[in-house]
Image (cartoon, rainbow, N blue to C red; front, side, top):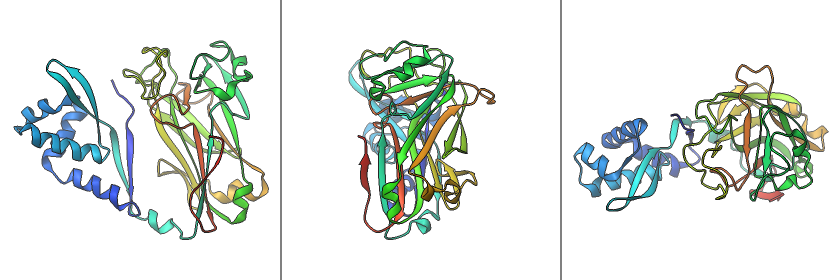
Length: 323
């Protein structure tokens, strides 16, 4: 079964990470290990035997791959004590050689953390639900539950078609020229139980304008989400993919790959008191596979919806909004 894999994004402003990945790829043995782990997971002893290496040498190669973020290593109980099981954790590598050229000096980054239950508006259809860290909010498959009085506690929400809309303030951005706005979140399709192969076209709108449509490959399970509470069943949705949408003067980017020509100018940020961000599944999409949106205490990533705004005004990154 397929599972979600991240994209490793590199640029020349983060030389340490780029060098770690370069080092990991510089060894034929490590490349062969990656080929093996693409086919199946394996522990260090198995890889040592596969490539005729001392176990200590295999462990060093594994450490290099793990430090580069290319594999995951999970300790599991074995017949002769604990063993470290390795698995592939990325799908592709993208190097943006010119990213540092767009990073202007004297810029300030504002970070807004939005709990997933703090949506301004919603419209949900089909199988749906909303839960907190402790249990269900309202009743499963009743859209009215999305208006539950304590929906701000939500840590996971899902639906088949429809949308959720969030609104972020803009007053702190008006102190200088906005250079870039970006959004990040953990998300996947929505299937009965979970289905690792269950594609869904999830659309992003910013200030009412369609920015991107992401095709998510599945509703992921087969292992527990890193942050999931104990009461959440193993047969249910477990984790999602970490996605980002970034908009600047050059266009809109999904995970650093340009996906549309929507630019900052079209958003008319200076004319609004808020930025509207909407995620949803159109009823006439090619793949109507629903969506799950994860909060900071569900899935694999300890965050809800995060917006970052880069403003040409000196200083450094600042945290604002709701934690």
